[in-house]
View 1 (cartoon, rainbow, N blue to C red):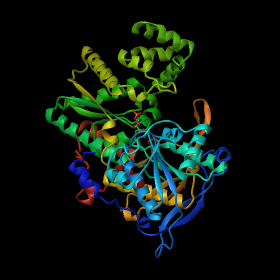
View 2 (cartoon, protein in one colour; view 1 turned 45 degrees about the horizontal axis):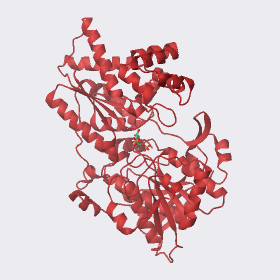
View 3 (spheres, rainbow, N blue to C red; view 1 turned 60 degrees about the horizontal axis):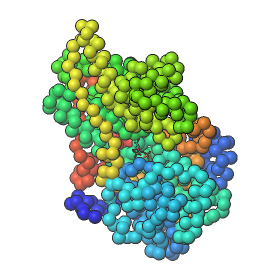
Length: 555
Ligand code: FBP
C-alpha cells in the first residue's frame, strides 16, 4: 500500500482510552434490564438473552495474575462504511493479544456473507499495523447480506468450529445488531459455546439510545460534510450568484443534516422528521423555500445554501402514500408490474401508472417533474422498495422552486433572480481518516468488545459512554441488545428490532437549530469549520459533535 505522509504520521497516533481500559480491568455487574417496549413479546423471543444486566468496566488494582485461556475471535464489518472501523479491529486485536499472545483474530471477508461462505483471513499484526487510524473498511471489506436464516447461522457455526472461534463481533447498524442478537440467542439455544457481541456503527447517527451515546463514524462524516458545506458557503458569499441545494446522506434520519446545520448555519435545513410531524406537503416545502429565497433577494442576496436530508421524500405524507402505492403496483412478479415492464415508451408507462394510482396519488405523481416521476417507478431494492437515496430530491426541489418563481413573476408578484447548483454528499465522508474522537471511541469499543468476550458475555453491544468528557473519563461497558428492542412491522410481519433513533422535536439539537434558523435564513451567518485537525489545540482536535454535546448537556 502506498502511504500518504498523513497516513504515515497518523499511524503513530495512540488512541486515547478510558482509565478502565488502561490497566487491569474488572467487570461490575449492574441492574437487570427490560426492553424499551413490548417486554413480553421480546422476552418470549429471547429467552436466553433477555433481561441481562448492564455491565461496566472499571480499573482493577494490582497486576493481572494469569493469562486468560486461548481465545479465537471472528470479526465482521456490516453495511455502509463508517470512519473508525479499522480502529475497532485494532483495539480488539490489541486487547486480545494482551489477554493472551496466542489469541487469534479472524476477519470474515465482504461482510456477513464471509461467515456463511467461509471466506476469511487471519488478522496478523502486519495486517493490523497497516490500517491503524485509517478510514474505510478495506481491511476485510463490508457487505449488506442479512444474517437472518437458521441455515446461515449453522454455516457460521461450522466455520467457527473449524477455526476454534469462540466469539463473533458484528460491527454494524441497528439491523445488523438486531441480527447479532438473534444469532447470539440461536447459538445459546444450541449450546454451541459461541458468543456474539455487537458494535454500534453508522454515519447516519440513528443507532443511539439511553446507553449508546452515538454510533461511530457520525463524528467524522459530519465534520467532513461540514467542511465541504463551509467551502461552498464561502464560494456562495464570494460569487453571490448561486443557491446551493445540498442533499446529505443519512437514510431516514436527519441527524447528519441537523449536525451539519449546527456546525455551518445554512439558510435552510429541512428536517424530515419535522416535515412528517407537521404533515407538510411538497408544495408547502417549496413555498417556504421560495419565501426565504425571495426575502433574501430583497437584500440583494441572490445566493444561499439549503441542506436536504436524503430520506426527505419518504416523510412527506402524500409522497409516502404515493411510494407505498407504487411499491404495491410495481411489486416484482405482480401482473401489474409485468404489464408495466411490457409497455415500450416512457410516456405510455407514465399514463399506465397514473391510471392505476388512487386519485390523490395520481395527482401528486402528475405534478412531479417527469424525470423524478420516472425514478420513482424504476429504482427498487431487492425488497421491492423505492431506493429513496437514489431519488434526486435536491433537483426536484430546485425544479419546483424555479417553477414557482416563474409563476410569481408571471403574476407580477415577485421578480427574483434564482440560479441553483445541486450537490449530494455521502460517499465523500464515509471513508475519511477518522477524527480523534472516532479514532479514540472506536479503539475503546474494540477493546471493550474483547474484554466482554473474555468474560463470556453474549448478546451484548460494546458501549462507551460519558463521551463529552475527556477520554480518560469515558465509561466502557456492555449493554444487552434486547434492552434496545421493540416489536415493529417489517415486510408485513411483526419482528423484534432495535428501535431506530430519529431526530426528536423536543431534543436539544433540534431546539437549538429551531431557535436560530429564522435568523440564519435571512441574515447570512455562515460558519466555515475547515478540515478535521488531528494535531493542535484540544478544542479544535477533540471536540465531539454539537449533537452529542447538546444531548449530553441536557442529562
Ligand atoms: P448503514 O451504516 O446504515 O449501513 O448506511 C450508511 C449509508 O451511508 C446511508 O447513509 C446511505 O443511505 C446508505 O449507506 C447507502 O448505501 P450504499 O452504500 O449501499 O450505497
